Image 1 (cartoon, rainbow over the protein chains, first blue to last red):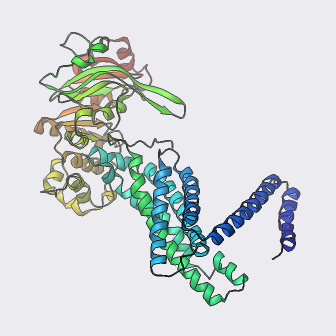
Image 2: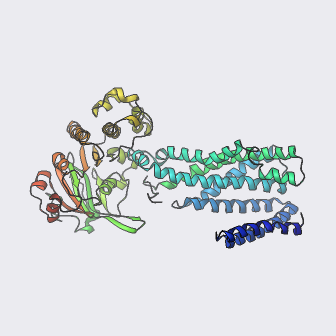
Length: 252
Length: 272
């Protein structure tokens, strides 16, 4: 696709802005910002990827992946307001997920060890881990609030933080994985996954594209599970202090 | 703050510098030494307890009364360390609560809440939770249920299906499984109907006679406070206003606030 033809697609944005102005939704400014940001970010990442792919150097690839994990952890840790020190725990959780899944993919030669394979697939895994861990933090806080009385009962019977939060942790882990599993169930029926769509548009054989997509789906299910578990076991202690008191205040 | 620590002749509130020199009294179960506590909420920092000092002897039943928001529940939560003091210290059986291993402290000082908060599962699951937490299995659950006046037939029943009074008894039995010598009761009858409340009250009095429990009993029911207490504490706005033997407190309250509270002219003090 040439830049010239790409420019025509801005008509979509113009159309959306027209509707916003007509209906006085007041979203025009946000639309302009979103369009400009998406364009600039994607163009920059396009050039960076091109450079990293052509360098084909492990250090640059690892740097790139680290940056992606930092951004993902930063983004997801916003859901952990009220809990201190979530960033590093999320970073560890997402990093472990990425290492485990890539180790499997690379050691069994499922994908070639080239940045042009490792980075995009990592992007999908890390992105999904980010969503799963953000969701987990959200659920952990909500479950802790709704089960507050039960947690206090357990603590006052002499339970350790781990024992007192076991039920809450289990539920939060479970609910953070449900969206991934649900979207997997309808895959191909409701929507064609983005990567597969992209490959097909770029001229790949649809059956080949499906194979890659399945690889991603399986990796994503595993990554949601690993992330939720690791982040879960790293973050539940944040709900308590060293005196085994529940520190998440009732109005957070 | 007259009437604190009867028999000891002074209050600690005026002598915070003595903190390090607090001696354990052989028969003391709980001691508050110049305790202050506040919480930071949406409206900023709010002081809930201010310079509270008082001693509860072993085997006593101290009933704590006072208007809503006086800090009564917070006072209880300091004893089993669900909350920590900001200033001062709390001692249980002569030892500062912060020096106890937390789990051991909480098994020594049982707490029963206003709402029973039974865990999912059967009555047996609820009774067994205390021992399971500490790696054991519950022996003779029947006896634990009988002890709170419930039939062992209920063991397999889902906890959720019990009546309010039964739930509170199960919650009581669950706490008693740990055999705590000290029991904190936080408005344990206030969510029950009159008959169930009376039954639970009588049960607690009976349990105390059987096993020589020390009770710190927060209640908004003044008649109950009078019936069950050996000593009564009045708290108003986070301060311990008067402590006196229960009969004396109700017959001849010394403090003006106590008199106002008892005649119902202080908010929250309406006799039931």
